[in-house]
Image (cartoon, rainbow, N blue to C red; front, side, top):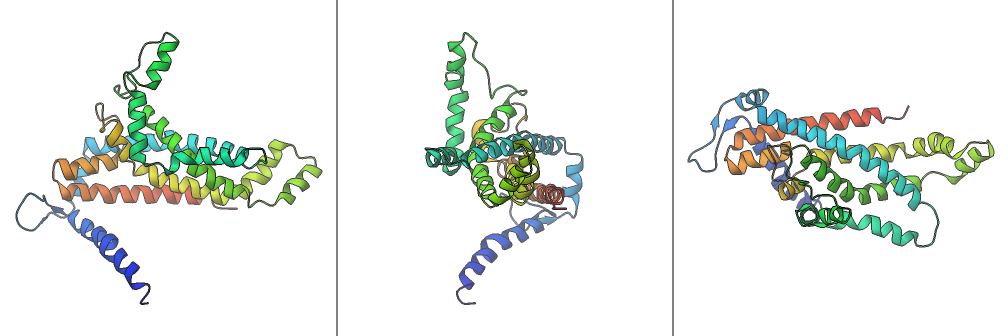
Length: 277
């Protein structure tokens, strides 16, 4: 208990206590700029979100962003993991090169991609080589979220690839040999051996990606600042602006706990869908 005490105190003081205080604030009207204690207003913050057009838009953007990034990332990461699972010369370098983007700060990656998307950035320079005009990648409501999604797919591939590679290496090779003897082709082996054996890790990867993507903030803050016209304003970014731009801590806390319930619901759905039969 003595050795556990420092870690337990850290969790209590810096994690559980702020969460509890945030939950209390969600039932109040409070600004750090005002004097006095927060004013208790009951469920008004939560009920107000039902008719809040900005919150509904942010929730839709969060769902769309998650749906754009998640399946593409998992599918590409699975293909790369299967390639990295094969013995060939330079496989270690191949795995390392794919994993490097994951260890780079998301803010730093976002700054690099902000330059590549800029008017004189890499992507427009490449388009100029084939006589295509420059594109306003992050400055159009119809394309801004797609631009952020492409960056996030690239950033997340490395971690998902490593996890899926670890899952592939736990599948006994005897199963593939037996399937081959029984006349199963590669697609049949993938369907009846690889996917069932990889199911637990796939469920884990999907659940963790849902949690991370639903809380996206840094890439939105750096690349678009929620614009243009709120087309990239996720719930987490809206919470930030509500709390620190408008000093409405009660409303921001209510949004945070609605987001928590939303993420928990999506994660439970993913876990139930991936449950082994």
